[in-house]
Length: 459
Image (cartoon, rainbow, N blue to C red; front, side, top):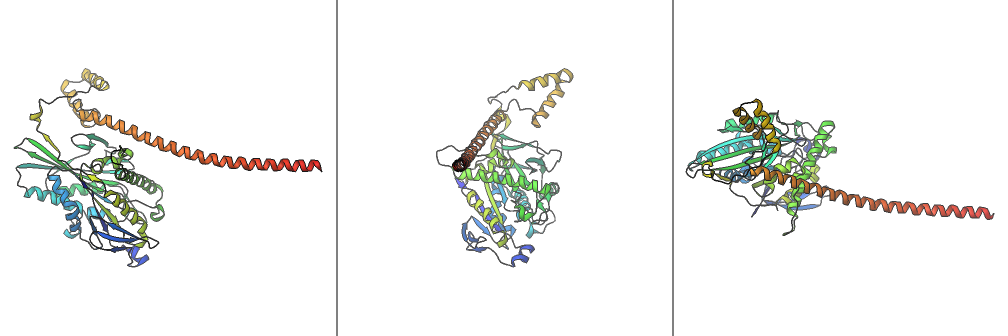
């Protein structure tokens, strides 16, 4: 069982850092895997990762080491996820999108453009007797809502789980792409719809987590099977300190939501890496939309790579250390990938069919049949299933996923209740100690007053 691949990128110093600290840096490189970081008190910390990309590193080198193996895996029906993580202004979006998503010189292309080129190049060079099709979706998680960046009317997409496809975004727009140019144009239109804002640390700060989802279908005509691999690139919004970003109003509310979801991500990583072998542990995937969508990637059902983006400046040493510690924990997450495959429908006619009857569903359809033709009702029923209004009556995956969702939510709420109860008990203990102290002072004061009265009476 392999572990998550974790790399670190130190971006070049920006003009503000150069004006404040000159060319001073808090990072001392040892080799291509290890380095030393100094905090604000000049204390040194050693770190080792799969690869370290120092200032001046080429985008092509990052792609070849971090992403290329995952691209190749997606064509072999192995799911893959690439995540950029770090404080705001650390270079995450530049690493993902490059200088520009279209019309960008080769040297400055980001991971996105290189992944697109890599997918189509691999398909062109493939010698397998297969037909490949690629579909692209693009969503953002903004203020804890999943929004479709290809169709802004879909601003609250629901997350569902299937035993075949894993975590899916129900109703998200899928665009068929047949070459790199089409893919980049689609990506460009989606990026234009993404939520951004200005802070004191970043003129164009991402105010949402953005996910670029490539689904690769491989039709094996000889074996009458379909294999599919899902490749997800995740550009996380950066963690923010309000005193540095100067966030106010709407920007401040966005920052709070961003930090909350990143905290939830940290809790998931902590839960996964601090468990005791043989003992059951609750992983709080459903505490945020981000961790729910990344459940497959974090839960070991995917090849996952993490690029921790950091500033090398002493002015950001505390934030860089926080990012590096997160990466060090993530390095211990285990992964056990598998090939996603399903038999041709012609071979599954005799399969056992599980039926779930929803009474309210049947009542709605019965009312529709009274006023519409059978064909129209059947068409509506299919549309309702596609939009998630109805469950597919023959889909046991939907039923079980719903049951698991309710069960997990119950467990999560119980965990929160226990935590709140524990906090309440501790608070009551502290208040009890304070009350006893006040009571003791009151008793002493009362006794003192009695003694004074007795003295006056004697006189």
